[in-house]
Amino acid sequence: QVQLQESGPGLVKPSETLSLNCSVSRGSISSYYWSWIRQAPGKGLEWIGYVYYSGDSDFNPALGSRVTMSLDTSEKQFSLRLSSVTTADTAVYYCARGRWFYDTSGYIWYFDLWGRGTLVTVSS
Amino acid sequence: EIILTQSPGTLSLFPGDRATLSCRASQTVNNNYLAWHQQKPGQAPRLLIYGASTRAPGFPDRFSGGGSATDFTLNISRLEPEDFAVYYCQHSGAFGQGTKVEIK
Image (cartoon, rainbow over all chains, first blue to last red; front, top):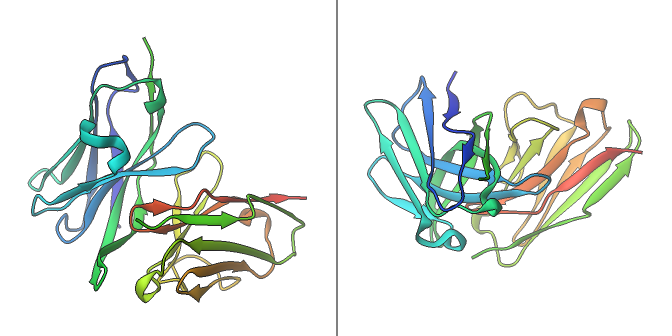
């Protein structure tokens, strides 16, 4: 059974870079959109972006150029870096697996597997 | 970019009641590629429905999804105590704001 596990610092200072990893246990790391989603305290879900094993990626425009993602197929890990963080970036960060499809409107996906999430607090 | 709007924000029901949750898209969802996720307090979300109407493994048949184009629904035929949770609809990078199903 495939499982996802997030790891990384739970506390980041304002203006610094948040870095998280997600390990994929069992299963293939190809053919899916490996994604990050976050949830601020008491709020809903916000998609951050995905990275594909080919290197393709897509990010939430609301986060602009602060987001970078990478994928290491040999280690079966993917990572998130979010720069210039503020207190508004305090959230539980989830990694997730996206199943994608292509139709006339482009690439479409849904998340079929989630990690347990990790709380990242931005505070000095 | 599709915007998903869920209603109501909160649904207060008794165990055994039927729940009907709505998700409206700002534009047509081609091929009904709409998913629903269940999130219990302190837990990660979990895929419940995909393709608008296909139940994910592990969920009982009291959960059903329907709809097409821009209007989708999630029905829970008889609420069990473990069904009280927040439900999110999702299409690609868009999530609805969630509907909380709480015990009345």
